[in-house]
Length: 371
Image (tube, rainbow, N blue to C red):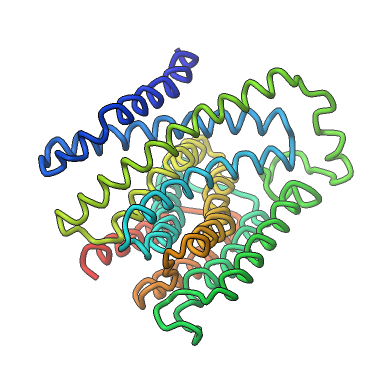
């Protein structure tokens, strides 16, 4: 049954691509029929999320086959490609979407660090009373997430080269290099000498000198090539369908008068849904360290790789990219970082931490619709 579901994902994705390539231009002329437009949106939303699960599945399979650090890079880059494709599609199709990248990054921060972490810790506290995790790994993630958040989402509001929350060209180039470099150092340490920080505290300690011996010495090249092809087969429909989703999303926000930030929230949900569900399943099974790796790893990769990619697209196309958060967003982002540092400063969590994070997520949602 699982094999059938795995095979059905790309089939459904490519069938959707074929239908939109053949009939999409005609469908886009009937967006004034709101029920029809809603049906198209639900179709694309479900298709992209379902195929995204296939991307994560194939990326994890390749990660197991390649070992570290290549395995982690394949999984991370697969998710980042989807995120960049969705953001770029909306950016390039709408001249008024200069804040989309910022809204998406901010939404990922709030959804992951407050929404998923809040629900997960609350659920885990009810089910397991207390849960343990690897404190060193969570601290390492936060030591990277904090500066990346400040550089990407807060600092642009306080520079004097520009007055609208964007970055001047030299700043965009240097900050992109800096964030990629910092994230690269983190990946190197995570998959190398400090790999033991990211395993469950009751797992067998990992000697860095033994890592080379744990990597596969002989790869099945045919199987590796096949899973790489399957990864591409799952990614490409998302990239192609993102253009149609961008048009429908832009039209829907304009017609309904919904907050512009809602576009970023929808993209963040699309990108993080597979990892978010996996994290909640891991917490339910009392594997909090794995859930933290998924959640904090998603935030770190989004800030470390997606923002440089979006800035590069903006510099190449001349499309403005505004990154600086409004005042309420800065307060919420800083409060979330402080709260996360407090939550993950103790090696055990309870329901209380989950309830506090969840309350912050509710405040975020209220501010989206009533700023």
